[in-house]
Length: 106
Image (cartoon, rainbow, N blue to C red):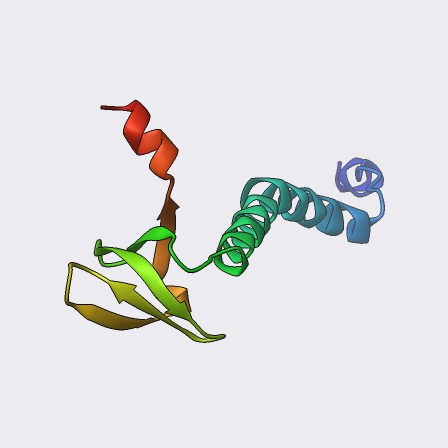
């Protein structure tokens, strides 16, 4: 009886492959669902920040709307109303407001 149980052991494949394959599949799924879209989003944001010019209307991360008066590599000076100028880091800009799109919505 015990002799039969000892000889009927299942034939196992390579245990290394059974451990590595699930981790490889998980990495591939995470790459396509998380890493790749985040890289594309970061690249498009960097392109938008590089393309900013004097006179562009922008919105900061805090929700402040303004027009760019001057630019440096690190900072942006915004004209908020007729007399108020505020200095922000370039990284604090959320997005650019397209004046053509806002005039079409009226």
